[in-house]
Length: 95
Length: 310
Image 1 (cartoon, rainbow over the protein chains, first blue to last red):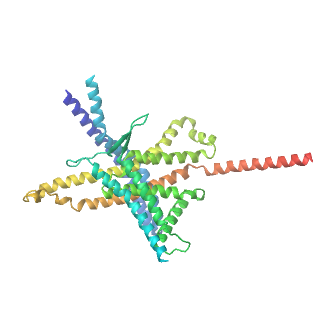
Image 2 (image 1 turned 135 degrees about the horizontal axis):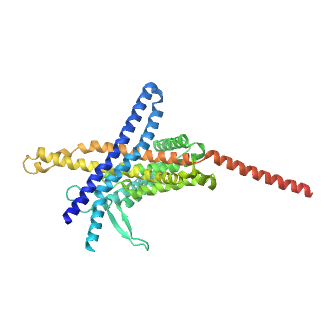
Image 3 (image 1 turned 90 degrees about the vertical axis):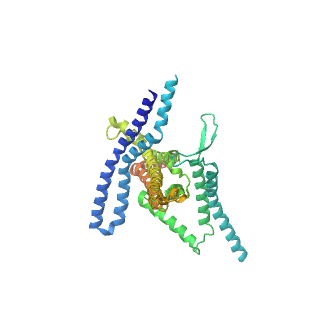
């Protein structure tokens, strides 16, 4: 029974980490759009390349935030969560 | 003349040595205290010792020690760069220093406006600290920015600055800004207020940490791959991971150097944007003008009183 519980904990953490990384889809599409538009703008007006690039980088960074939330959740689920969940399980079993 | 220049040289060398010494000390500390590693493992910052405080035991970790070392290094580097500065530049060092200062001032002025031009040293400090902390991974040390606690500390500092400047135009205006556009949305506004430092900290920490995790994973994968491909070689040649030579360095170029410098720039840019964006300039000026008018009216009134009395 303990093996089953441990398996569910570890498997759940791994599946959850994988699902959390779906958050990477949105920023990928959004940043792709931003860079495409920036390329168009530079092609139209090559003299304002510096301004366009710095504005684009700032926008990309803001758009990246949601993806990074997903990444942090995935990292926590893989490296931190299993140990804590197993500790909780052991404490409940010891009672 | 020669004695003076010799003394100048001696101070120069002393400052450089003092700048490099903390990094060397941290490296020696790491080599002495690192636990024997079996294979490749991904762990957080190593805890050196734990302080007993009345509230809670306070662990002193690698991240804190490394960030203090970086602070000392930056301090002595600044002393070295500004040593022997004169009104007419004679050394290359002074030209470099002036270039850095000029760039920082221009950037702050462009992004924050004239009112905040005094912010240049703070922004430069945050940028230099962040960049050098992340670049520590080039020396094989634990970069303090891949520990959430360090970066969260910086973002709390930035958050308190943002709140201070929002508060500056008057407490009523600050509280009113939560009830916009309708009072019903106040909880959302509070959440978005708290999300600012959280997202700043997570962005910096997530980028640096994910870079180091990917580097470690690729190093492990290359070790396994070279054992499959070149494992048939006799003796120790078969066990040596040849594919690990050189290939991770290309990735390190992106993850360690480019990403670190970009994240430092981003943290500074966001700091500037949030602080200058949260400051209600027109409201602040209107309030100041009202106060000035009140003061002038008071003086006028007292003058008239004096006139009447006489």
